[in-house]
Image (tube, rainbow, N blue to C red):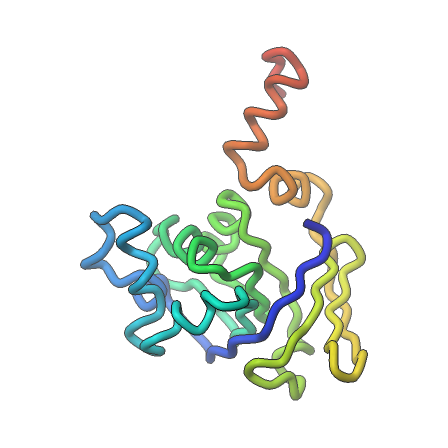
Length: 172
């Protein structure tokens, strides 16, 4: 999963988890929730993402609000391959890693002229974002190896299952 390629979907600042997954849908299965992802601020978003997948390029404090793990999980199931923002709400950041959704902190990317629909490449191992049409690049701090290992496994639960089978039950 070291390299991700997809078109950009731009969002502003302070996108909260209630907007990502509205509360009235939380009791539904993920299959039923996914069509409503971001519907309050961008109707039709899931249909746009469905064709190619996508990378969200958002303003500061993405994922603020409640601690619902459903928000990053629903984004991932809707086809979002990564979220880039100058910084994230702490609990969203952790929940995203736990469900296997890459999150990248890059303030320079947000201020850039990357436009809606442009294709970018995110290299998680090298900490580089590349604008495909011009080869312009931005750096970001690569994730610590333990968080990258969780993402590589597909999330915390698969990581722990792998860890346990590799170590025959020895947990740290």
